[in-house]
Amino acid sequence: MSSFPVSEAVKRMRPSATLAAMQAAADLRESGADVIDLSVGEPDFDTPQHIKNYAIEALQQGVTKYTPTPGLKSLQKGIQSFYEREFNAHFEPNQIIATSGGKQAIFNAVCAAANPDDEVLLHKPYWVSFPEIVNFTGAKIVTIDTEETGFVLNAEQVKRAITDKTKLIIINSPGNPSGRVIPGAEFRKIVEACAEKNVFIVADECYARFVYPPHEVFSTAMLPKELQQFVCIAGTFSKTFAMTGWRVGYTVANAEWTKAMNKLQSHSTTHPTSFAQAACAEALENWEETRKSLDEMIEEYARRRAYLIPALREICSFQCSEPEGAFYAFPDVRGYLNGKIKTSADFSDLLLREAHVVTTDGAGFGVSGYIRISYATKFERLKEAVERIKNVIGNLT
Image (cartoon, rainbow, N blue to C red):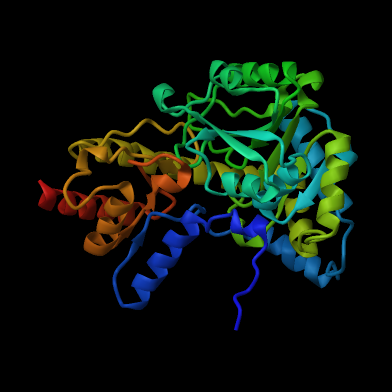
């Protein structure tokens, strides 16, 4: 029997490193091990009860049919109101599409814009799906190394990377896996540099609300209209409202870009689940109640971060920059790469085997020698994980 002829587009893609780490955790759990999973990129909080109630109400009211491809009008209006209220930005309905999660938002944006002869800029470390989405289009990936600036992208780095073939740049802030935040003034300089060269920006703002004081929430929606036309905002309800399994995200972009993404989505998922959209619309409409749940989550993440970063730095040879947002730490483990432990993948594997602690190898994010640790896990389990890591490292020295 001949092998299946996989398409060249899919052949260019690699499996997700984060999903592979989750599978490793599941396999170990099945063997009976007490596993602490620090690889998961989702809130450990349940979806707020009032949002679940909205979905139940929508089901009871028969919101179970197809919706328009861009989503329910109520959800588009809710997203409009959200940006007007939070960022004093006005968008028309023909600039907004509801998507099946933030990942589809980014996929739609890139696939609607990139051609095989184009170059797409990615700043390292990048989220694992960025290069694979670009690979799918056949465009060429050009990476920008930000290690020398503490994993914070700046305008000068972008200017140096732009060529005559550059079509897009994907920017993620707060960053996954680093948790670093590009200051608003610097982000504006980046967009200005791109606009000057007619380069478009996919702004992954999936963690935009997860910013710790004194740092401030920034959205490209706050930029002047002449700059906004170069930006596609990719947003999601997954992180902000602890709704990862609901699969609702969205894009906000200029009307022409949105029209192209709408065409693409009409032939793929059509639209996100109808009653999940309705719940998201109500969550935005009743913002004060939703905001209270969000603030409680951020407060708890801040408490975990305040413990975790100093705890990691106390471990000999661990260097870890301060994450200003999201819920990830990205420690440098190169001080332990010697002998049998040659790579950060080996280091993650050691923690898995010896400590039953699951982390994600930084190579999947484009930066070897680092591991990603998610602190979207209960505080006591987080403390136990750190003690387990210390014990494993103690046996190495």
